[in-house]
Length: 483
Figure (cartoon, helix red, strand yellow):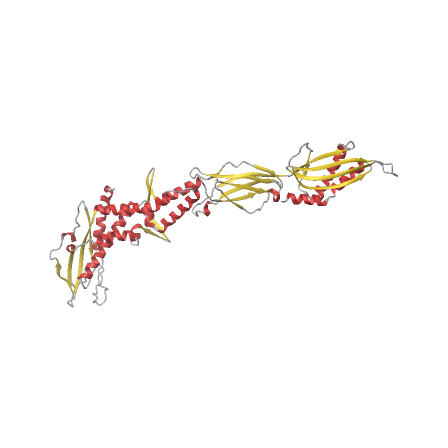
């Protein structure tokens, strides 16, 4: 640090001398005092004016050659021509003030990680920004206020109308240690002001908010953006660049935990848990996730879910509005809604298949079942198929199972014989017939009818007709499936 300051101070000495030599002459603007007209933009007075005296009589050596010591830095402020010595002294002090500000600006610029920043449509250097920075202005003002009476040199000129004009030189010196400490404290305090915000970030959500707010604040104050630093394990780095890198690293670390492919039958619901994780954030926090389904000409709108406290959310996909086929479920964690600087949201996807719904046919036959065989059962299955086709029930039939699960059509036949009732001598067959639709063991719809026939063939025909033409039963099944 000390070595770098020494090199910088030597280079700045030339800048200061140039500034002193080229400071323009002006006239007083104080009220009730006569202005002196000048025609030369340099420090020298007009040609018609002549030097009549100086105060003190002997010109100090520091006017032409800046003192050099290991402990002090020197600046010479020079005024424009004024009608009074007081105005000229004030102007010399102001010139010294500007040079001190320029010194601090040049030092900060040399120390900053970035040298140029874009504000609006134009580029600005750190030196230009110094003039608007109150903190640096306060440093310079404190130094200039230390100038004493013995550090002035005044030249008095007389023009052709016997009017005096005053040009004052003022010597300003800065303790080298103070200059180092001023800049070091400024950078340290600025860094701590922003760095304290990063001390505790309990969730990914809060980290994104703090990163965004800090970057926005630094962009509003380019000087702070230049000097603020962060002491990382690998060394001191520019805070603005560090946060930008951390933001990208944090977002890149977020992923969806294993998403296996899934399949459901038509009208069933996929119910699965989606988990989000990051090795850099144990808790994700409140973050929205957009879920989209693509495939089979699907145009379903996105559905928004919110990640809960356990870094997961329950995803439900209702297949009743989806045609049988393969789909891709895409997940997008909407981090850019928390921080607009997130360029690419974390994405995930998995394969999802909607299979045609199938239903088994199950028979429950009680009473006198000796007359009901496979031929009769097949006839009743045909009755169910007729109803499915006629009323557009979105299911197909599969082979009967002894203990079917999933979707099941159950045909229950309770048979009994009735003895002849005089004057008839014919035995009748009475059947309490029921058809029911159930899913996963829960009956959703059923219909019953008592049928009397003279034989099994006639009874089966009547039951088949009852099943196949039962519009209300099949319509209610459709309604159940669409829920």
